Image (cartoon, rainbow, N blue to C red; front, side):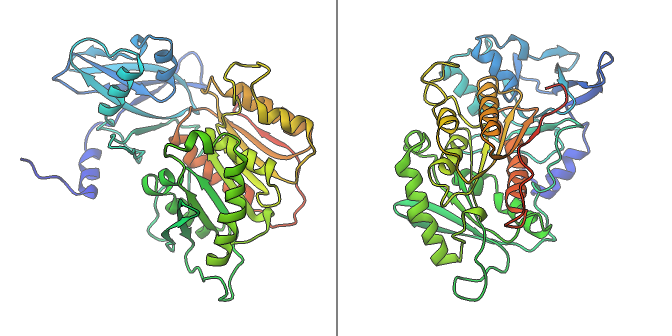
Length: 403
């Protein structure tokens, strides 16, 4: 049995090797790059390159052929033409026998066995449920993510575990936090849905500590609410009981225990996918407690995935016809999210028409934590970084060139 290298030595050993994927200019268009994924796997019949969302489109169409690597000499290769601002997590899956199928069972098997690129250079994206981490591809013009990596030179906060109203909540406290009643605070508060993933897997505490150390946000009490259990479809579906529980039980508890503010203008609720829908709904239903919503790739088709059907986009329709709320929004969605892009743009148009304070952004990526972890930091900085009482500049839209 071999001896495992410690993480720092493993990193050094990896950097001695040729790094992949190979990135070259597109001779026909300077806005694109030719990205060649490479596998040196030997004992296999084929290798499947899984590029987040890019591969998913063809998998949904029932054809993985465009993602099968071709043997070139002693290695496998596959080239994608991607715009120069693309970011995506990816894995490689060497397989034996026939090409993997595209049924749900087949795909889950692929995801259980796919592994990161052994020759990558960027920090990997951790996984949960026993799966392997993913490599991350960030092309040169992808949005910067200055707050994601752990920094050893910043003051560290701490995370404590609690159960509130039967719900698991991990609380990240900023460095030098003082308990309620000790002269500090009130602290701004950020509530992150799917908190077990953000905290235990993605180490969002490092991002929060970096934001505070750089002065991008003030010292903030962050509530990481666990929502990834069997009750997730009910909780994160414009559920008034769930939002009221957050507003009437969790936030008052955080105020009493940790000095969290009661000011909705300094309170952010954030989520992704169904959590992004729920974040926007929380600001719609309870603007008295949630004055800021950070929605990433929100599932605004809910409850009907049929585009433009009269039963779809319930929340967007409510924003269109009901009284305007006192709430601010940071909304982003990926250009590769073919199932969400139209609905997020529709929400943008409605919020803009109703005069909401909105920052809207489209990134060139997919339904991917490799993108969301940078967007979360940017959204928190936007919503919490401005002093309370400043005059909003009005709706703002940020879209990549050529979107």
